[in-house]
Length: 164
Image: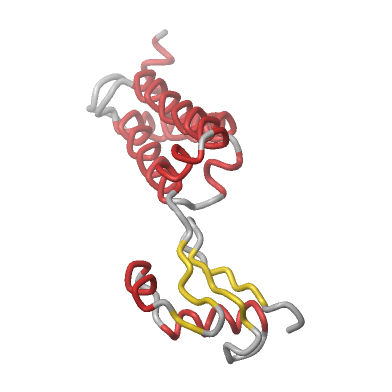
């Protein structure tokens, strides 16, 4: 027991060694929590995923620095990844929940016309659209492009017109 106290300490008056030990263990706890959440949770970069990642990091950091009890921060992290998992499951079964959690795509270009209102909502410029077209098609013009959509992750998806 004395060895545990020496390595991990208690409260917020921690030595560098104690914070280092807590960081080491918390790193592996975070990996386990991310594995519980699943690859989808941190791979899609949706607003929900980013918010969950920030919150998970903030909660776990409190345990490292001793601002909150270490086991309590792990429990809170488990709640966050479980909530993510439950909402993902519910979203896969309900379009309304999916839209609430992930948001919706936004068409900013369709059949030769830029949707200026949608571009303003998504905060994308003509230059952003041109960059997406260059990246996806290796061409610089909008000829042969059917649509450009802002995905729920913020990425721009370019669809070529049939026969282009």
